Length: 302
Length: 302
Image (cartoon, rainbow over all chains, first blue to last red):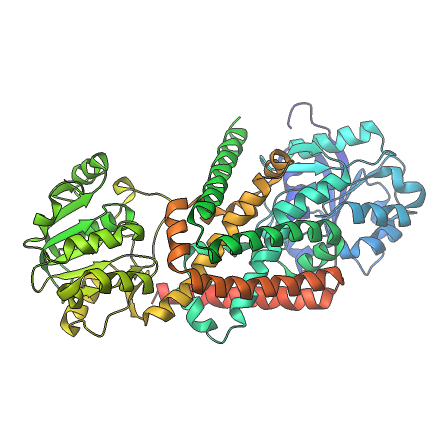
């Protein structure tokens, strides 16, 4: 067990996919959890989770799963955010006193709105979270204990939260190897609109555009590793990204408008064959990226 | 020596960087070349090339390098395209009869225009080419013999070319492990505007945009692997990409305009919270990319 890390008895993971499953595995590896119960839509996925030792027991979402909340110490919602409304409604009256409810949703303001609408007296127990980790693979089969190692885990606590509970949750994520950071919900959403949601939109857009062209087969024949990396995020779940776009619409629109204005400026330079202007932009971008990679590298080896 | 592959005596590589150096190493590995002379601006780089066994001799571009053309069988121009005008001028009267002149430039129509302007009677000896390979590293130190293995190598021959010479050059690239494909120059430029030049512009643009924001430090702190892959091509040489943008301006403008229109459509869906529209686009993109990866994989294991 990681020294100083909290230890909990029972963890309930709703949505035992890559994120939920990896959280359970990481807490088990750190010796921080006694029992894990998984809740999910797919029985086959729950069976995978059980056979891989991710969960001790699995129960289907269409069954009487809220009885499992009875002795829960921590409940993690790791389903698509679109399901949170009904989950909050179901949990509201069943969450035991002192239990921590948290989530792994990619957007935070909309999740908090839903929590405020549905959780009632249980609201102070909900600590919103967002682990910044993932791969292009999904499901319990893709989960692994080190997914969160050296990754940012953002918490956006509510004014109503008990500081001790926030510390406990933070300790659990630290035990998973995560770098816990606290942000205001609006700032979280603005940051991820720019560095994650917008790039996803751009990558989906480019692949879709090329695929719809009459010469698509020829285009893809010559697409190489640069294109592959640029569009890797267009391999992500369309449903999840639709939900994120709707959930974080305003912040994404704002980031997109900034980008469109920037592209128009680049277009103007290109049309004018303004080599100096293009060079300045490209050089600034390359330098900024190199600086970022250097910082990210030194941070992960600290 | 690869069976059936052509064998040449002397290769002159102008610009002994990643591409030029790897071409020499690959031909050496295949036993297809006798002597390699490197020509370049940087003496230190030529020394690296000699010490790594890439070239037998090196000569500086500001020296009397065209005397090295005397017994050349193949001359590869692998410098930035911006230098081609002066290279063509210097080579025009010194290229021996029967020698093949080729290049590795990322754009083809503008290179052909320059060749027609400067090469005079040597024009029929110039066979334009573009190996679709690269890494983010540059210089002779980055060269390696297998860079072109299973990569497309595009030739855009001129009507004036001798078919036997085209076959010889094609055989040399095949001996390097490349998949040789012949395209019309305009089609080449249109294809690469869409699958390479536009993505580079988009990646440079996004990094530059975020780096210029007041909250840049915070944004980059939370940028993760998706952002890293999406922007990897923004780590490329700003000078090279300025040159490519200017050289292939019209085709890139056309691709960019298509993309801007597509982004505006996406923006409209986002503003209208049109989940079905977004989902359809994202799903189409993901499916097209998965199909492409599958094809690319089966092609590379054929």
